[in-house]
Length: 185
Image 1: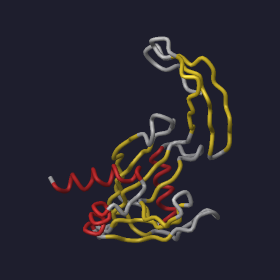
Image 2: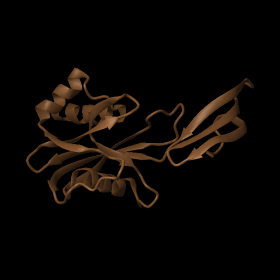
Image 3: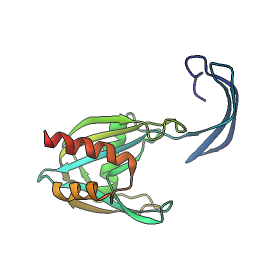
Image 4: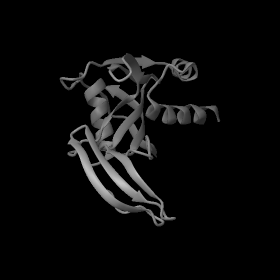
């Protein structure tokens, strides 16, 4: 459970409703600074996530295409995943995910941005990286629950995906828009 909230917010009660590897939910009763009580507030505890804007030596953007069951559609996305407990850092997790899902690696890596996917109800952060000069160094090593294809896109194709609204993964949109904006300067 997280520490006490700041500025007079108090956790009066906290109870875990589910503790599963991919879904941990707790219900809390909170008291606001003015004394009002929120009888039920739900918090989803997730591990941190990572994603990477990966650009090859020849300036192609690496995207993956995979089925997203909650939306019921196939989605084109950045390479992304969960920071596993054995990952020593978010950067290590991002490098591992890119290699596993695409077979690409090496290059120059930098932390690009850190953001919260939903600070009102989720505990995790998303660490976004920019990896330039990456190259194909291996085959994909997918988990048995993954069905992912790799797609190399030009900058113009990425811009078109962004402006057309065809990219749905919100945690990928912020770093991509930021990157495109820096190119316009």
